[in-house]
Length: 538
Ligand code: HEM
Image: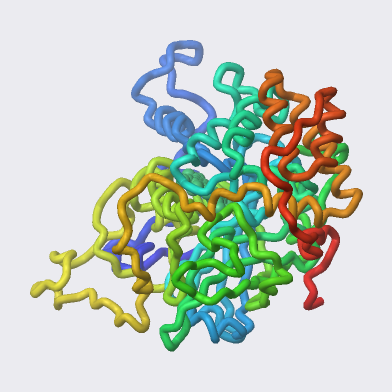
């Protein structure tokens, strides 16, 4: 790369072009002074004491001392790649976002991750996988920060620190749940039964994917789309892998963890290097934007619920191809900062209370993880649309802003920057009515059903998939020390299905409890059992 003439935020940088790393033929200090020796400290005699005045020694070690940044508080371990998204134009009826128009190509950066393990943990653990996509669109950056499981553990973000504390390594021994006591995780999910649906997906083969290339992705929350006429729809986003959905079996997962803890990371970069570019189709389930924000009785604001695909088919709207590995893991995979609030015109959020907390959390955590408020200037985070904000200064500011009046309107810098009209601007919220409410700390009654959809999922599984689920619960609950936790967890299973409960209870050597709620009257959903299935457009 040559010297830059504009700053990362698109502003003129002034006289001095930005310094580019690794230019020139000589090894230098950080100040560009050529070095003649980087292998010996400055000493008083060859066997004498090292001198404090050795700037090169101090600079080199100081920089090294500060090489690490905090790992992400969740999703610390990940692997990423660059690619391109091509719109089919099929979303035009519901969404005006320009990147979805026919044959528009948009660069993307995707980071896959596990949730609970630290940066150095193994890839093939039983866990949810993150599937976060950054679309560098001409209208600004859009981030779709999803998972490979379509539902979440909790319905309200205020519980997020609690579920994560329950799932992370125990504070006394710092041994990950996957290898030691499981008591806190199972304690939490049996006391907060809204977690039942997500936990069941984790205990299914979906919890141990074969490859990042063979996973579905889900936006989980319901989003609101706006079309060119200003009409709105509610949608759920889905990524469907062209290679189909495939999982490991538990014995494979454990062996691979021992033999190649980087299995998924290696698989992704090897495939891309070999030219076997992984592809996903982006699809949407579309629901009418009715005042109650439900679809056929399903509360669309409840992130523990899906809408079965038979009832609202996933409509393909574009194709993503990952075609380039990262050049530098730290610069790109580690420093990338996704945010569910990075939206473009045509895409809006809903009142899902889990999403509301996320809209606060990501920017907040990134300010400490990436050292201040200017991380949008880091190359992987830079928008590929022009940026002209009124943000100034702060730690790690690399732009040299011009002008004297970073406010608007002003009469000194030509009154700029202009704001876009409501028809082209982002963050033009749909005027949904919210004002008649009382302030309360409570969940709606529609959030109370925690067992119907887990039962739907269980009934949709093939006999082999059911065997795997039973084995997974038996293995994981078998790691709990507390009898009361195991018994309570069996009580949850009794409310899903008697066979599931009895077989896990037998494996644990415990009696199977009776259900405490009537078993839900639901039919299996064929689309839920789709391991091995390729996306139907193939
Ligand atoms: C990170 C997904 C819920 C807080 C992530 C990442 C993904 C993700 C994919 C990794 C991003 C990356 O690769 O850099 C989800 C999904 C959720 C969910 C799908 C629910 C549907 C929440 C909630 C909170 C939260 C409720 C907090 C209230 C965080 C934080 C990070 C994170 C703090 C680390 C971000 C960073 O350090 O850059 N999440 N998450 N998440 N998530 Fe979530």
